[in-house]
Image: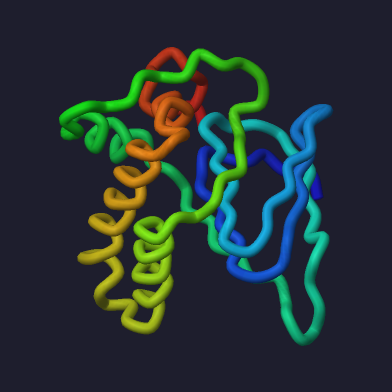
Length: 151
C-alpha cells in the first residue's frame, strides 16, 4: 500500500515487512525497527505472517519538539548526519529500547495512565535512539531546515 511515512519508529514484534522508498527496499522483522526521520512516500507490504503467527507491529510518531528537548538536555548530543537519500533505516531493537516499547504497549491496559506516563516513555525512546549508532539520523528531526514540520 502506498503511503506517506511520517517521521516515526516502526517496530516489528512478530512477522516481517518490506518497504520501498523510491528504488530502495528495506526489510525488517522480529525485534527490528524502521526509523523514518523525514516524511517520505513509500510502498509497504507484509511479507511474513500467518494465522498462527500474525504480523504485529507498533508505530510511534516522532514529535519534533520532544526530540529537540531531549537533544538539548543531552550532555553530548550526536552530530546531525549529512547523508542524503531516503531518510529511513532499519536497526536492531536493543534491550533498553525494547523495554520502553513494552512499557508503552502495556499502558494500553490502563488507559487512564497513558496521558501521565506515555510522554516520559516516549522521551526515553527518543533518548535511546539519539544515543545509539543512528543518533545522527534522528537529529534530522530537530533540524529546522528539513521539511519535517510540514507533516
